Image (cartoon, rainbow, N blue to C red; front, side, top):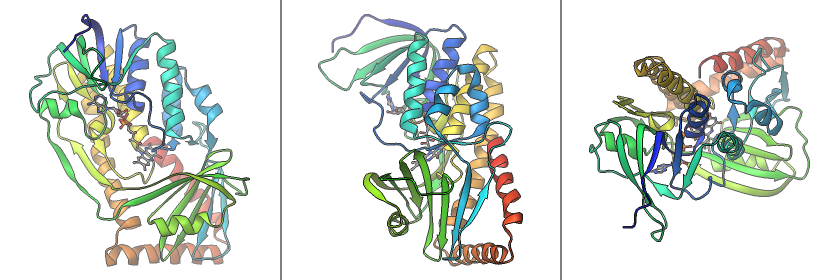
Length: 376
Ligand SMILES: Cc1cc2nc3c(=O)[nH]c(=O)nc-3n(C[C@H](O)[C@H](O)[C@H](O)COP(=O)(O)OP(=O)(O)OC[C@H]3O[C@@H](n4cnc5c(N)ncnc54)[C@H](O)[C@@H]3O)c2cc1C
């Protein structure tokens, strides 16, 4: 294989997803030389995450990306509840001290991060993959050959002081380090649809439809684009039929896993983001936790105290994977107890609404948003 002359860097980041790009920007701002590589020639054309919470926005402020993110996103200005066909109820006022959560397709988040990363002088090599045999990496600083996706291109040989695996749930860096990836899968898949509308008719940027058949959320991710996310394809399509749809732009069922890495790395090689934890999209935390990992990791590198990174982030991830598993069983599980609990929840909401309980639900909604914001 043909080799390019060896490239030198302080930090080699595998993965140009939200975690890798956030880490790249934070390290560049410390004056480090950074190279990010990604096996895809372009960012993925579809969006997985669509929510950035207020706490994440606050912590991204020093990176110089927040104005662009806010300009591109839609605020979570409230939620419209449709429960068992009862008259809908609108709850407002989700914006907390941090400016509140923002609905923004991951494609755009990555684009904005990438522009900032390149503007700061970061090197980006697309179309190269990191691949080493399982357990063959001892974590020390060194050199690695990155393989081109297009065989006519030269191998990229990179010498690094730090290697960071931000390469998602099937992390090749985690595998090269030989780390254990523990957890379980959910039997019930989730379903999501993105659709372009002819016009916007909603009262708030989020709506929840819940019935005995399951639930579906409508999330306005651009002025005339919605994401419908729900328990089944049928449930999502039923909600979609009530909207002035121009075209479905993306649709997918996805399997849900709850996993975390036992160890976050060793020596000069560390993992962050989905490479260390995955869970269901309920709560919209995956991307937020990846960005928080990246910022904590960059700070730990600056302070030369990597133990602080693990001590800070690992318990947060373990706790959220546990809570998220419970939430997913309740909201999506097919077991009888899950169905009964969902029925009881809907019954309580209906009772509250019948008794003019919007006044009670309103502060509860604001509180849920605030608690979610402080946990990333
Ligand atoms: C349907 C769905 C909805 C979601 N909704 C939300 C939400 O609303 N809010 C939220 O916070 N999170 C959400 N998530 C989770 C979120 O998408 C992920 O947590 C997030 O993408 C993780 O970012 P990451 O950078 O760690 O990994 P990824 O986004 O997976 O990026 C990893 C990158 O590494 C590259 N890569 C992988 N292996 C290699 C290799 N060997 N060599 C080179 N490059 C490699 C990949 O090409 C990719 O670009 C959702 C997920 C799904 C599936």
